[in-house]
Amino acid sequence: MSTPSVTVNGDQVPLTGVATHTTTLDWLRDRGLTGAKEGCAEGECGACSVLVARPGTTSPTEWTSVNACLVPVAALDGQEVVTSEGLGTSSDLHPVQQELAVRGGSQCGYCTPGFVCSLAAEYYRPNREPSADGAPCDHEHGPNGVDLHALSGNLCRCTGYRPIRDAAYALGAPEADDAFAARQQQPPPEPRPTRIAVDGAEFVRPETLTEALDLISEWPQAQVVAGSTDWGVEVNLRGRRAPLVVAVDRLPELRGLSFRTGHVEIGAALTLTEIERKLNGRVPLLAELFPQFASRLIRNSATLGGNIGTASPIGDAPPALLALDAEVVLASPRGERVVALADYFTGYRETVRAADELIRSVRLPLPLAPVVGFHKIAKRRFDDISSVAVGYALEIADGTVVRARIGLGGVAATPLRAVATEDALVGQPWTEESVRRAAAVLAAEGTPMDDHRASASYRSAMLGQSLLRLFWSRQARPPMTQEVPA
Image (cartoon, rainbow, N blue to C red; front, side, top):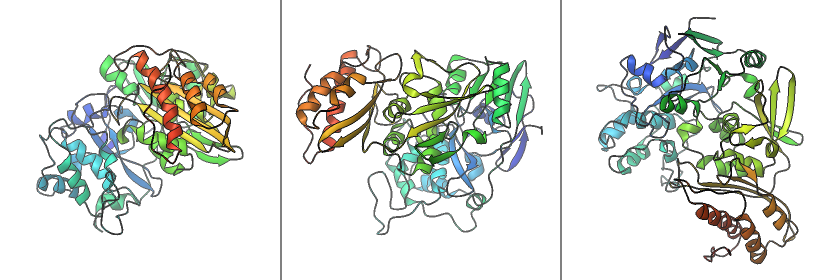
């Protein structure tokens, strides 16, 4: 193996004597690159945003914004990172920095470097097309094609967002001699095997899935990471340390996406952003899920395998995947097995996955149900943990429900199927009366609890209202306002 190193703002920097749990943010700041800040240490505020050169979906390389506070710097061995300092200087501002400066978008300045990096990723996003008439596409997309959701993970708490939005919408296309745009047309950095051992702890990036499985089989207590959006929080806020961390995010065997006979296969280590762009709306229920899953910064790193693997009862992906009748492909040195997601969760953060198994992929049976919906109830519209999440996939023929799948999150110790409600819908007419009866059943599904996010009674009420919301979203008249029957 070569000496571990990271290319930062064009300079190759060795990772010598760096503790395996060290975050990219801490490592950068220790090197004097203090533009990126720590605001929350859990990937919520975006003050730590930096750019990483990643494989693109429509260009060879894409500049991707990530939370430097969550990514172990060891995971970036052989990769290229650009910070706000690398984008421009006070005497030679980058176009993003220039627009934020002249339009008063810098606020107090603490979070500005994070805004700069997130907006720069959007500035360089391939296929960002301006509107034909020069008018805003909608209230979240500017006339220059900038998607304001690129900043959804950057939460400045000073004043308003208007000057930041104005700066985003004022950006043109990169100039012909823009070095960062030119870099995107070159191949991305190749993932390389890594082994870093410091003070009795190791970080390992295997070269193949077989190597990863053998390592995990030998060391079942190893911490497996992909995007580190969950493990990074444990490291930062709870002081968790692992004697062995195994990175699987770049394993080619875990990064495929294909439509096969009878199912869609999605690699467990593809990021949610990659899945979203590769699917391009071909799985409508997931297309509804993605914008509500955390923020773009998180989706640029988080994976389906990680969201399922943590077995959290409030993960956003499982309710949608349960509604899609998803299956999980588990790999181990003994071979592979396929488990229905409905049978995967066995208890609070417990699953049927053995200690020596990895989630290789997720399968979605075809054909897909035509009537779908994903409802997330949270304290904030975006970038928040759900109090209740519901995924729907229904087939309705001649006005009658012939098949129903409903996935729930946040109402029990595990994600679960709303089987009683499914039974109450199937064979019934798709009418207000029958939907109301089924909504009353849905309100009693699971075992909701009182906690700081919502009360049990609120969760139950939201479940019932969710089904009514789905019904009325498919009707020609405005939604009703009546309450769900108790």
